Amino acid sequence: MPYVIPAPIQPSVPVTGSDASFPVHRVYCVGRNYVDHAKEMGHTGREAPFFFMKPSDAVLPVAAGTTGELPYPSQTQDFQHEMELVVAIGKGGSDIAVADALSHVWGYAVGLDMTRRDLQGEAKKLGRPWDTGKAFEHSAPIGPITPIEQAGDIGAAAITLRVNGDLRQSSSIGMLIWNVAETIADLSTYFRLQPGDLIYTGTPAGVAAVQRGDELVGAIDGLDTLRVKIV
Ligand code: MN
Image (cartoon, rainbow, N blue to C red; front, side):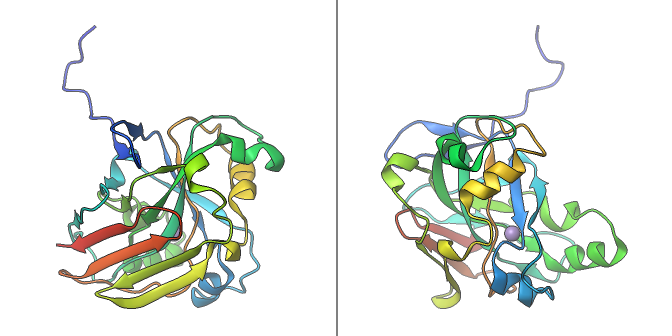
């Protein structure tokens, strides 16, 4: 049966070393998953992480060797970067055991959880949802996904973000409060994970505002670098 309006385009992400791409189902994000970032946001660094979502069409896929153009969004004067490891789910499930969790991972990528910090801060203060601060168009830039068998063990990989060449964020995946397997296990107690889900695993300290013209380079050892320009 035909649709009455054109069907939405399936968002997808390039895959390292392949012409095929990874179709995106949902985009989950983990809040406060590095102690140093939790502290810079005014918390003790010991709270359990929590989850929020972005729509799949918030993804801004950036192919290897290219620079993605990220439009400065409306309604903010404090547009901030959050550099993150992204987990791509290849096999779905609910109530996944920690010991089984990595078998659900298809691959890893470098991502940015771009945030209208002023709107998020206001929402926190008023006890309102974060959507306008977090879930807007192009708010989830992502580099190519590297299949897990090629990425190897990224559990202690270095994670960095440079803005115009200056080091803004620098940490290790080993500093995650909840590691990748624990995050998948916990998230799967709230939602049935599906093939195509992405999980932005949280950001280390050093989040800060960007301006039009800024060039962001995100890197995680073993994965393709993500390059984005704010336009
Ligand atoms: Mn984040």
